[in-house]
Length: 365
Image 1 (cartoon, helix red, strand yellow):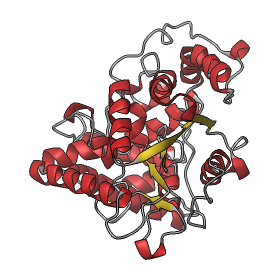
Image 2: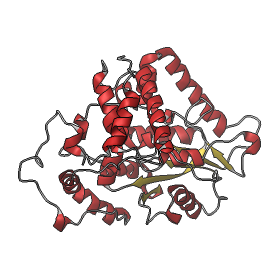
Image 3: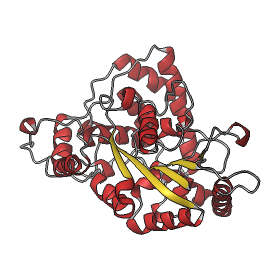
Image 4: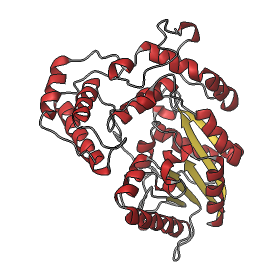
């Protein structure tokens, strides 16, 4: 009997750290009965989520895979074919015993519809899997909004999708889709440091798998601390947003080349921050933004508590305020950072970053 463990996110709940810790290893070093499946066919960790690209239509692809498809269509199709064949070789090796347990992590599985989830399940059954365990992490909507906004702002200066009265963390819809297919094989855990096993999402996932699959040895985990997708300062966001507005993209999300240049600049600013001893102010939401996010998700938070006994940190409902100026009912499409964040900045550090980026340009396409 072969068991498949799927870690499906949700996004911004430590997925990159999990993928770094549960990293595939050469066959000769494979530990025990576990086979840790790769997230792409490239022999390195990033970009993750190729499993989603096997199923989703072009308009629903994660940004990095949509950009790869646009930049090199034929190469994209070859890579998908390579990845599908690679998974089959891992699950059904020709010259080695079949693994007893498989592990695959991809936060991009989170958005799958019931139809796609059922197709994914049929495909794995056809490969010989007979038992499933699906693990999802859910975090506070306010914390997710803040984290997702930071990540989005690294590559885009369009804030329209983050209008607080429109933005929704669809965790109930996503979890109901996976529960419809996998039932009791779905486990939901809170992404909250005070509730995670040993305060670490990697340790929590390993512990959850071990206690759920007592007939398997522990899943092998890479030891050591991993800093993955670190938060940025509000000064860095402001300086990079000013650069993106000086050099606007021709398309909504820009090209693969533009993203690569932006990521290189973010690494450059990260080195400056490290050399400066961690200068910068944390990203903090406007209180009225937090209020609206909390109010929009309160019913789903109650459902999460009742259905999975998962209780997430939340603002006291008695303290929530609805702004009297009408902004709680709707934000303009033309949002700015000041509409969403508290811009209490270290001005000398902001000026230093502006100087650093003064001579930089970005590809338009």
